[in-house]
Amino acid sequence: MLRKLLGVFTAGAAAASPATAHHVFGNSVFSLDAPAIFTRNAKSEAFQLVAPNDLAAITATAYAKTDGSLDEFCEYRFSTIENFYKPVSEPQALEAAHASGKLQEFEGTWPGASSPTYYVVSCLQTGDVYVSLNIVTTRQHYSAYRAQYGAMLGSIRPGP
Image (cartoon, rainbow, N blue to C red; front, side, top):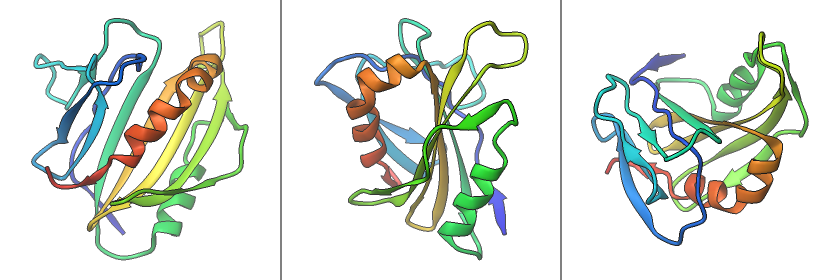
């Protein structure tokens, strides 16, 4: 059903900043606006954005839409979450100007780690691409910056 197009990008914590920077994923597959404190990690083969600290990580993967539905993509993505993460929300609808999909929140402790992490998984369609964009942080951090993460998800659009 899906063909993986591009790799992953990782970013640090979102900071309270009204300024944003435009970032293009891979070879103009999709783009988004992230807080300006995020910078590109040119040392990585994968598309990476990093912030001055490690409070959060954001990863994204894009897939060509060849068949199936957005609902099937979301169901598949949510069902493949590692078993140490437990859902703490039901899937929630996401609607933006150029993307739509669902978001679900999970929480769990990574094997070998001592404290839990909050894992927010969003599944979106923008143009003819499915996007899985994920946020890993603490529950407290995500709650404090929920609006910024929502604005970032809302800015996803096809191409540059």
